[in-house]
Amino acid sequence: MPGAHTSLPSRATKVCIIGAGISGLRAAGLLNAAGFDVTILEARDRIGGRIHQSSRLGLPVDLGASWIHGTQRNPIVHLAEKAMSTTIACNLVHSICASNGVWLTAATARHHYAKVWEILEVAMDKSEKEAHLLPDSAKMMDFFREELDKRCQEAKEPEIHRNLMMQIVEMWGAFMGSECETQGMKNLYLDAGLEGDNLFVASTYESIINNLWLPESHGVALRLACEVTEIANTGSIGVDVQATDGFRGLFDDVVVTAPLGWLKRNEKFPEAFGNGHSLETNGWPERTPEKVRSPAFPIESLFLRPAHATNTNPAEWRQEIISFSGLPERFSQPIIMFFANGQWGRHITGIVRGMAQDCQAYHRILDDTFRPYYSKLPNYDPASHACKPLGFMSTDWQGDKFAGFGSFTNLPIGFGDCLQHFEALRGGMGETRGVWFAGEQTSPPGGLDTVTGTYWSGEQVAKKVARRYSATARV
Image (cartoon, rainbow, N blue to C red; front, side, top):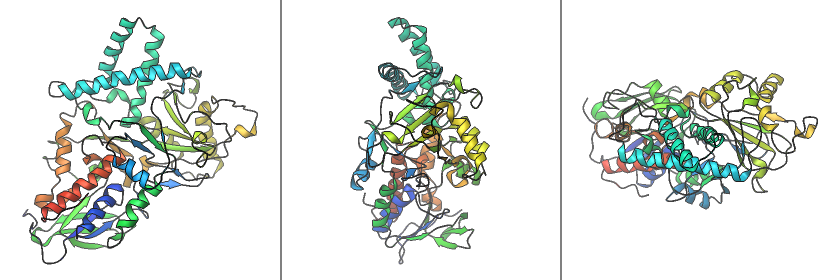
């Protein structure tokens, strides 16, 4: 197919950006400032993509992205400061409930959590240095077990400490959106994040998104509730884009920011994209905020293989919670957010999918599911009405086609050199067909699976489009 023209046309160069998430908004702002004629087509009736809030249970809470991962060289930290957002550093977890339902002391929890991360960092380092030597079948968890056994033997640690750390490491599943046993060793280094604290955005991402978009929105055509159904390169005429609402337009270039899970379901990539393979996508963590009357306790807590919840969690999937009662006073509220990813997330969302969130059956199912966890919190009294949830609300990203059915990129065993996959996606088909890709799956190193990486991808694609027309997208 003949390539699209690459010289500056006499009219303003028209660029279509598909998706109004943070990568699309960032790319649109930069290209608009560089003099391009920019149109954003967004399938939802709002901007933000997987950044979204709800006030149904009280003050606004993030139902999608809610963290800033790493503070060093992180542009989202600057955006948060500019938006006067409130963030809380959450690093070494010191609130851990053992599988028998008994809480570890804060010192014990912090000590073992830190030891687990020490081994994971060694694994990252080995993966980066020896990726070309490691076989596709090498598993991160096999390395972790070997390293843990060696350290426990040298320190004469009791078996109970080893077992505890084997359960704590399962929290890695929340980072990859699947079970940690599937994590490959060969490509683990690609998942390394930025240095510095992990920040929970107590004030939500709403002001960050608004501060990013509103100053840049003048001159950008934004069309909501516009689901794109076809993108076709027509040669010298341009790229033809069609949507379900009847929209049809010709553009010089198109930037697709849809999640990889959506792309995989809607487009068969050429062989050049990963040599016939595709990156794995797994479950975006589902959130189930629950409004309770509860005293404050640590913001972040882990429940390890809950053997005390066999009726509703027979597979003993681990559980992570965020307590909003521990946030700064302005944002403190009696809400607990449960993060459920992978199979656990699919199990829960599958049970309540399609149910009205204000019906008794919905409330009863989620209360039965999460009572084994909130009942372990300090000062819980089953006879007290003050300890009974007032309401529940659950996300269903895994049932959301525009979110790629809850997908984000991870790096399991058996997928070869995943760096080639990323390079192919970052390169896109812009130079030959006028079609580019952005989104977390095209993030530069250090940003995979994060808002930061998604934001960076918007910057990178804007620079490439501008460079194609001898223009400059100034970051």
